Image 1 (cartoon, rainbow, N blue to C red):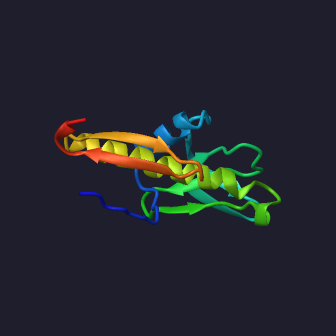
Image 2: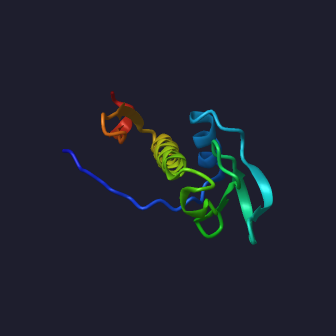
Image 3: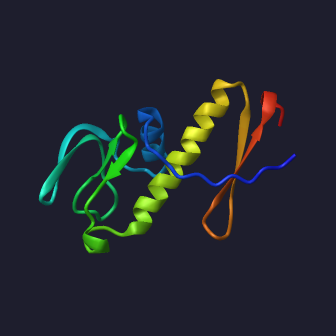
Length: 122
């Protein structure tokens, strides 16, 4: 049986954040308080390509805070890729915890199709 699922991502798992950074060949996130132009945010700071300020993942609340000045200080596509990678890595972690395997297929539109094989059977 097949199910199509669409999710809104809350970023709460530091391990999945680190795995998403590895997946995208980004520097590992650092814990701290980060300046976002006129404000600051505390959490895991992720350095995205060509972004002036880090993206801060507040894992306690699930919020992602950033200031890209409407795209002038960082392209939205980089944040979108990071969030997609986080969701994929989080799904992988949860599937493994339950003894399942997961297969991944990159689609032409840039989305990623994940298939969870229950019980680890491929």
